[in-house]
Length: 158
Ligand code: DLZ
Image 1: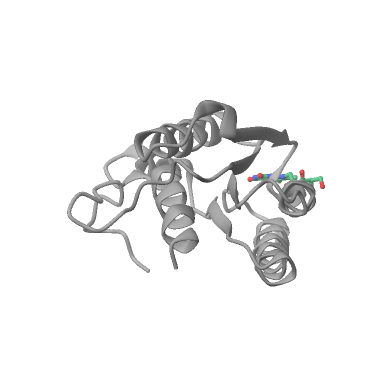
Image 2: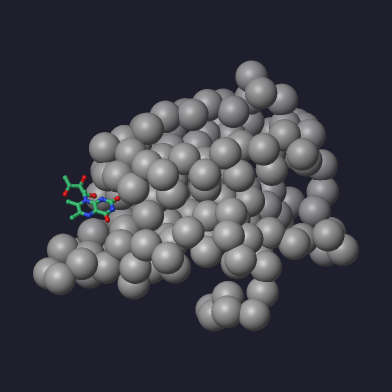
């Protein structure tokens, strides 16, 4: 899983098909806004790059990453949406809060994939510190938001 030596936004050369016939939901957390807003823009712009029309991208925010599961459920149950992208950033702190939030949202999003039988993508950064987050939100390791959008498109063509 290490992204240490990769720019994860460089997908040129791998087969990513056009996604113009699909409709997407994006739910993103307001916590660590300076990071999540960059991830969100990366995901949004990547969907456009692969042919998705702006009117076919439904964007919603939730207060924090813990709320991503419920936000994603509300989008995933919509019959008109083919995939949902969840974006958040939980930064390791001094308490166990980090572990509870990460575990809860990872499990919650996993369950939604199965429950609705559609891609619900885990675009949640779980860095040890702010610098690691910056590195993955348009920094030296690319933009994980771009990767989340590409993952959604690839799973729709699975
Ligand atoms: C409370 C909290 C803390 C301490 N840290 C983060 C974080 O780094 N990233 C994030 O997305 N959310 C954080 N939150 C907020 C929780 O996700 C959630 O919104 C609250 O616990 C209320 O349910």
